[in-house]
Length: 468
Image (cartoon, rainbow, N blue to C red; front, side, top):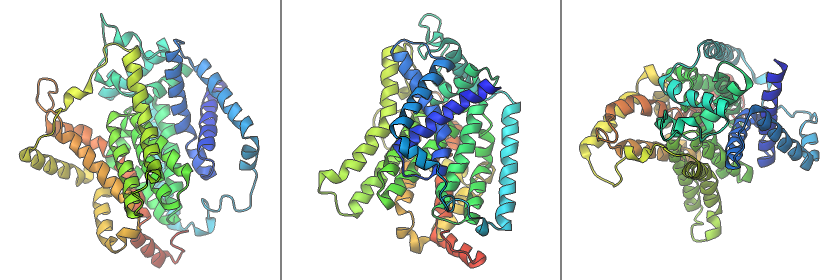
């Protein structure tokens, strides 16, 4: 037990130090919340690095390497880390204001805690049973833990046992393998730690622009979304992608508002990790790029090349994980499935398909069985907040819309019912698209919780400062 705890502590410590070095100006709560997500990502990258030098990875050499890097980081910035943990009067004031916590907050927090307890219990009790995981991500994780390399026996040229799921970017299968390396009998501990971390991160980010009651309300609305809550207990790729994609775009929106380079770099890395989880995460790179480009246009600074540095930096950092994985596959792994076969390689116009796609997507989005009232509430808030729309997270709204349109375009370009991709559009929207909406849920909840109209209503009801 102590050894298991020490392994996870090392993972968290390395992630905490890494995010502290990359973004020293973000709050301690946010650094802590990003500790496990960055720790898991760091281990995943280390696995790839070990494979490149033909060294099999294990929990021992991963942990030792991560600890050494983290220790060196602490030594290089020793004064920073010492000051980071010095008690400062009011240091938690921006996150915990007990005097502003009311009975409504306590009631909603109780529901959230109960749901979190339930999903953790379900995750720990049931082993991975989802088909995509059992035959894909979790299966790959067990092989990684056993063989210590990505170019493993699954991709045997003579007797291959791989499928398209084994060619996915490595974040999910590699981080699932950590649990098996440690000796645990389920990989779901990875999702539990990521989920808890994300709830803290989302609460902290939202509270910076809202109040306690609205923040806990929309944190609960996000977590209680039926389909998202159900999938949180399954070992799939959608929940990790949700964490990285949504947090990444929120940090990009914060950068546009406050011009802190920490937020730009952190946003770019998080959006990059979203692609490190799923290929379709590319649409959020497009969404973030649109946000930054629109900001350049709005400030009328589009004539000078230096004003595009932030945009170029974002694209370069966020696309680098995809380039790294594609390059590694080309060099080290034989028999990788080519997902491009699922798409038509040229642009085309099919009004019948467009009409059917819009109709099918709308049926999915308005279903309270899948998303509760999240999408419906968002449309209502958007209408009520129309007078403040230009001054209220306009760039984030632009990023949401751009990402959604790009994601929908992927399904329009699918080569349905062809010889290479024999899946109907109806089935793809009902399964993959339905789960693909998860990254949008935190973005919609964040937008609503920080909207001017809802904060005014909360101020009127609670007679509190709407921003604190």
